[in-house]
Length: 215
Image: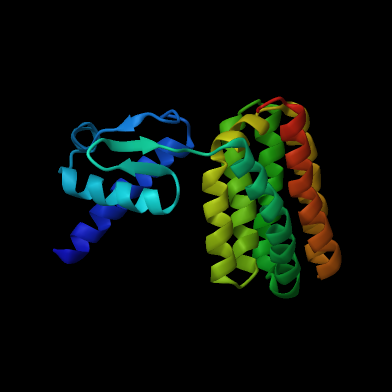
């Protein structure tokens, strides 16, 4: 029973966090326990626990005797995340270059081919999913579960921005080309080059974000 409660609480937490990060809930919007519980088919208890966890993450503010309100992600938060990511993605690629397997290299190549195919069809939801897969393979290849955990969290936090930037044909084409260059460096097991290219890849995404007028 305890495990079932834990899994239920985890599901509720992930769903509310996803709704906040995707922009479904606006900043300062009240999160009503009963409304969310009815929507998810759960009691108010797991919702209350999820909101407390989200307060610890800085996504929710709980005001005593008033309620829980969305804090969300600010422009500065997004820029900070991308700045940190640019360095961590570089470290990830460096470590991956030292230990990546032939199977993982093959998977990255397939992902790039599929991304080019779907971008040609203007099916950008698939492009976003493939981008997630590309970076996910890199995270696994790094051999560090802690680095993987942090980078996956960052991906979740900027998912709304990523969906917007990866719906622009030029950025998608540039991103695919950057992924291809990272892949070539990984094939050569050139850790320094892989680190530099992965760092630049995220920096280019930042520049695109700035130029797109998202904020």
